[in-house]
Length: 619
Image (spheres, rainbow, N blue to C red):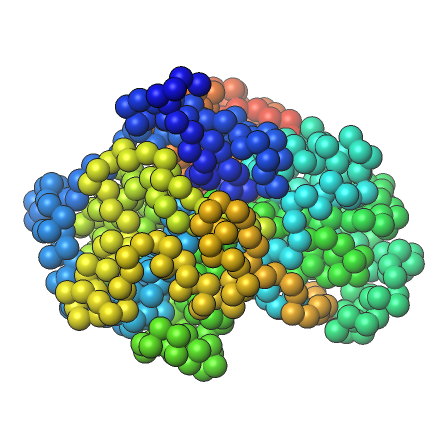
């Protein structure tokens, strides 16, 4: 490396693995390339291709200045002084249930903490949420009910010691590539891998010893039947299982399930089910892993509870990977309508939080992201580091709310959501921030400022401190640095109180406390499998991640190498269905549902079961 170049270590801005990368900075202060960190417990010694070149995406399509939308709909560039005046007027006029805040998995813990604190102390509302509402809210709820913690209890490295790994509704080979590498190592060491999905994915093809594809909606029935077969065949330790709270009720509830139900409702060959029972039953060191293939359903919480039940009766490890680099941290900071930073909304936790910060906060549970954007739209929306105009369901309603509300959009990039915003604020990317993030397994890691691409970009800490000062709430936001915010976080968040703040700030990782408070089996209820198809809508549409893009593509679609590989979305369809419809590869088809329609190019894929179509959601 040339003498005038320097090396700065920080965190990959993409998935929940939160890998450490080393960035080489040239003489002009720009990133010239990135390298994997030499030693990193999350990623080992390797990093995924997408993560290594993600930095290229932060140089394009950036919001460079604050803007306000004029009455004629045009955007006008304004100064930060003018932007702060506008914000001051808005936050003076709209409070409590008239306003809502969206925090982000793309910014640091310190920024998320300040967003929720401003929402509660200044705007006096618990209407604070994140994109976790769209992905792993069901996981957190299930883990709280079964283990008493809102984070996965185990570690990615646990797969390296496993003899069997059940991957349920997840595609880590492409979605969490560094975890995929660990799975490959585990397989070479002899671990058996069972992949249970709605479609055969890359993980199934590359790694699995046993592959099962289930009819969407039948997942819980499959899990319950698997549990009861393990019990019937003596593949569990009764002495251990019988001591778990809820054992008798659980055993009685699953006793009504039988393998013929799997064949009938899951559309799974009983020979495959038999192999899965034997693989998992004989395992001594089982790991149960799940992802958004189960959480983004109408019964996502129940499915995750079922998987935790399975793990508990087999004394297995549990790995639930998260989406964005700091979405776990955003939840830990209390960016939820159901959670203070001190814990779930309750009188006790409210008083504890108020005593620490010496301020009053609201006691009523707030509205969720779905509530305040779709069901009961609010008057004012502050949205940080999210693109709901693309990522949310019912987009016609979402776009209407964004248009009708006073929308304050704080983001690094020009996105679809920016088209609806009344005030647009330039946000630094994660590589332009200093602070901490908490990855999927609860590892708190230092984020270092690598570059300063947009001089006018400002973080939420800056914005809300300025506004709070003008509103006479400045004493609650008297922070001189992100480190000072982090110290407050470690006082407020119970699971962070044993973290060594000084060591984290020096770049030494530490883990939030994630020891289960209890172990509780929850008896499943026999839910009917609702019909999902009709004469008018004969297909079921699934969405999935691409190996080459991330979320709504705000970063990855700015990277030429990734766009060249996958420039646009296509609709994947079983060849038999294509023949029946008279369409061929490359044809443009119209895909319609009850809530909207798109025109898209179709492509055959034998891994897609008949009656199902699949597309990527990054576009």
